[in-house]
Image (tube, rainbow, N blue to C red):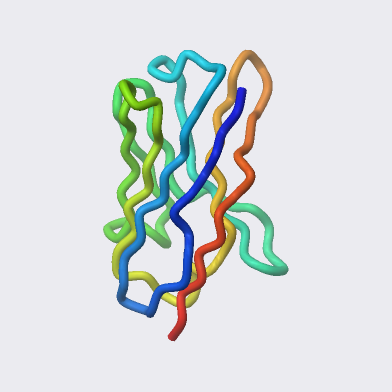
Length: 114
C-alpha cells in the first residue's frame, strides 16, 4: 500500500488549500481513509475521516472549515481547507487501516501565516 499526499504550502490566514492523497496497492473503494496532522511539539491528531459509504467525521477544531472527500475512480482522497488559521500549521498525513495494519503517507507541510 502506498499513499502519496500533496498540495501543502504556505498560505495566509483566511486562505484555502486543497490536499490530495493518491493511493496505490489497495482496493480504494472499500476502505475508510483519514487525514491527520502533526504540529511541531504536538502529537499526531485526527482531522477528518471518510468511510467507504461517504460518511464523514471531523475534529471539533476543523468542523465547518475543512471538507474531506474521495474519488474512487481516481483513487484519491482530498481535504479542502478553508478559513485557515495559524494553528492549522502542521504536517498533514493521509491514513488507511488495511488488513490489520495502518498505512501512512509521507506527509505534506501546511504553513499558515498570520
